[in-house]
Image 1 (spheres, helix red, strand yellow):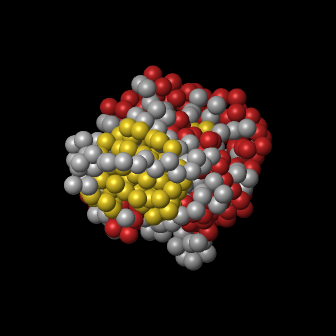
Image 2 (cartoon, helix red, strand yellow):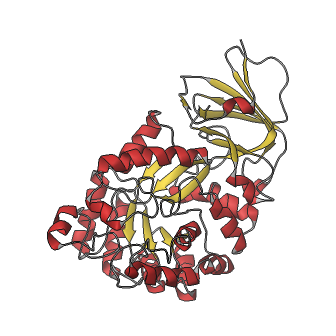
Image 3 (cartoon, rainbow, N blue to C red):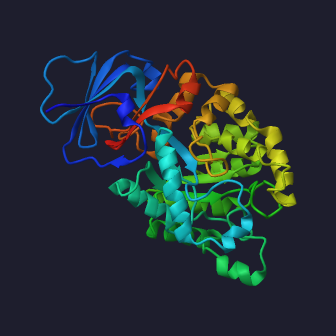
Length: 425
């Protein structure tokens, strides 16, 4: 018996586990298999056991094998599942920083389960979890991989490396409280920094996250410039690469961006104050920019309302004044731009708002969509698995009304999601 699902029957958020060798035939009204190739019109996609097995132009006719599920998306545009390279699934925006001393890691995992569902329902089938407690991100990674919870593929960093008193080190508490909250990932000097990279790798990190400069929302008020010295940065990059891991650097200030890029760090996330000198080094080294413009929109919505401390307010106003310039300058200088939002600083599920901001700051719609598909996949080193709709790739597919290569706002209302061959319905 052939089962047919119209779009209206696939609403909701309950997870349907992909049974072994279950087959779907998806009829797309308009297919974007690779944004660089544009739209190719009607197409039929066959998925078996979480993998795409064929992509054919037009809607195939004739009998469908018994047991196949036919999904009619003939009125929709189908494209690869989106990728967000900078999220914090275990965090929600606007919380008091003192909750770090109250909330448990178990509670953070529950928050993460909620946010994982919001994220995948918004069309983001892969995320890079950019810093969490020791095991919370890893638990979400396992839960979504095994289908225990509904969420995106999670590439998890775990705790971020920081200088003592830096952006990822807990500050603002009494000394005895700071001892209790110490996560064990601060380092000083090349040997200790290499050891902390190895510790992160040993405990399960998929990527190494560092805070190369000060940050906007942390309680240390030492500005937004460089933290690690050049030798420490090179030690981190070299050690991670020797272990087969990439390094992502939170970095705002220009000299911190320049130093991290020169050391071989793979992505610069935020890059708020990137100048020509810093971007020249990024271009020369092949360092990828992950601009996270939505983060500052989250800050903009909360500044001046008593949510942030006076220390944070000063830094937030500095960052807001520069918002978006890094994307404009990067495009002009040929620096690769990949998609990332810093979800958690704003509400999860609103990730697609980044597309409009990228276009407003100089990217074309095609470039913006590619930044969250093919370019993001390559940045992760997963470009043979995700980011395109092609035989052998993971069955990460979404459907929207309209054509996002003409209007990226269509991505803010995703109508249908398949993540690793699993459906929400």
